[in-house]
Length: 384
Image (cartoon, rainbow, N blue to C red):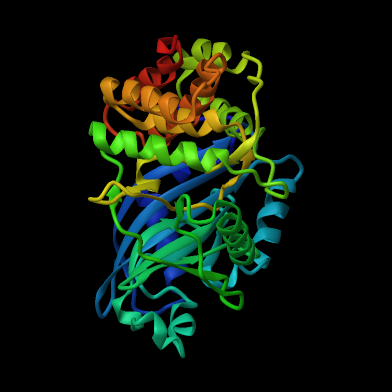
């Protein structure tokens, strides 16, 4: 379902049209021709703004791929056009420079980012840093959030390019967390900072992403209990974050899947649960919990860490675990490690986390995404 309140969105989702637009932008680098254009996802705030994302393949002297963001702003009396042209005039963060263009047919700003190791800033970061033990050609893309951040894998660990100011903040948060957590819990925090290219470096941690075996779940729950005992007097407040994220996600889901509106209204009407505040990871999912063969646990990707409700972490992990037995084991193991735990507000926490996770399915629109959204939202009804 397309939101009619955003002019040009339907056309901006046409692969052939976007491919032609991108080809004009790539004309800034002579010799490139678009040979493939695959839709990845769309995000928008109803009646305000849309961001469509494509993966484009081009051919010149060699074959390359780019990630393309098309940004549409609605607005009356030309304000939408003015906003886009103003945005086009602002240079992106140093580590994520891109080719940009403006398409008058849809009033869309196009940003074309390299989808390979040719990220600006990588060579500068590697230069003179032999201690990291890598050459630029050894880097590969581990994750790319278009226009926001990029994570590159190198032999010794991971380089993360942040939006403006983000590298210094991430490094500062990592230092604070290391001080308060000490040696009781393993945290993969940045140990190098280069503010000139907005990049941090995190050393590789032992272990593999959390699976759904009982031993791994028990180890993860025990490590979370240790993390939640820490107190962070100057940490970033995160108590409101689960609701803010769910509110934004709910607005989007209602637009693309009206049958979910009743469930969303039920979830969002619940008051925030009371409870103590402690250190929270803030973006917990199985990929962010590494479990080593000896049972030791390391938490990674701590950019969202702060002070919040500990059960919000448990709920975030709970909604992303598919096996019902593994979810029950997570609750039982955490209660045993951190107990006594007041679970009275857990259904609300699961509800908020489920809305954010349902957005993942709605944005990617893979086969059966409607059922995946609804079944995810139903999780909070299953929590007693």
